[in-house]
Length: 97
Image (tube, rainbow, N blue to C red; front, side):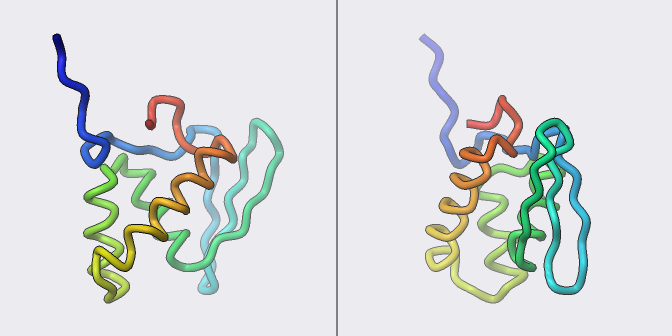
């Protein structure tokens, strides 16, 4: 019987149909397949950039914590909520659990 991967190790990636445009205030996501547009703050924009590099949740957490000067514990709930929102909006790749 094969063990399932730990959720922290599953590689997450942004959908191929999503385009990111950055500005100093954050960014805009465009889902070209659905014609949907989403506004992001600076942290959300950075997370999407990292997702474009197919990062694991634990890697995302470490990177965000380090770059924005917050503890991993403080960043964890916000990261999970953001990833959940991306899933609900169908912006994460179908393989991303």
